[in-house]
Length: 468
Image (cartoon, rainbow, N blue to C red; front, side, top):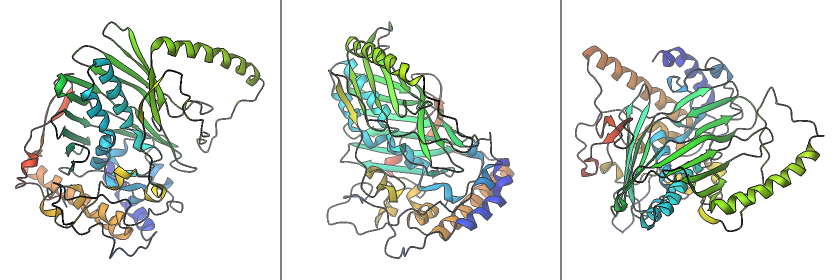
């Protein structure tokens, strides 16, 4: 709260400057349509929309330095940010994007050998961050007690998440296969920091995947995400860090290195790694880009190819030594030039390829087709959803519809309502009670986690908090 109160007045002024950037007639584009003749799915959707009601507004005229210059080195989750930074989704919906390539989980469940299952699980872990490519908007911070559910019968899963803590911000989620083939759950605590030219999101919290047919459990943590040039210049994103996926049944481990882009941008988006057994013997090599695809092959073939590649690079380096090095810009982090697509090593097999984005993605916050559907709301869904579901948040709905004035006003109202509720609990010395998750320990790692208590899909929403 200290950070929020310190910047509240400045942010309110910034919000007022950004409102009215776009004027769209939203009377006919509120994201709510007619339910078809077929009985609706549990979420009320039969055919998913292919575009947002209104295009994204331009941020080109908005100056953020007056706000961010006071935030250098601070944790951004404690700062109330102007709506110009946002995209029309809650962070709970952003987490749901892990499920876009859920077919990889179904594939893993059907694989007879543990090595093949780990390959598909590794591909799923990489695919979970693919939607972040070119996504430079910040999702709305979930309100305490906010929830999001998604049932996709066509993709074979259902998903529920809840904001279980506000300071620190923690989002808990649980998903299950509709054919009882998997459980996928975890809690996410992103540490956001502003470093002058970039915003870095360090992931915290454990992600767990259970393949029920094989009595196997896998755990991992996502890589770090960094958005460059948040003050001036063209925004661009990179992921870096090491992701270790552990099979807790047999001790197999997959180690994936998300490469930082490097001085010349040669490593941008690259992922390289391997699968090893409990004795640390390498069983399989993995390479590719988290924005495009992932391939794998036998370690011997991989090493043979790399030796040849190193010899070629050595000859090339001799010629480059005479060239001046690229200077590190003082004003912007230069956008790395697009490198050629992944060079496929002979004998490799394709583990995953990213879904093609819709042609109008650039006008829709660079959303994928899966993401476009996440905030969809049809007539009658209000009676099915929990009253805390973020589809019902008026500030996100306003921004999606292009009504920036309404979105800014509602964002401020909801944040003040949350502050007042917190003050009221303090006066009464009452603790916040979560509804669908409880604090506990991860059953496989022993680390602190938030575990699903069950019962959400029975749809008894009596006693849900009034947060909107």
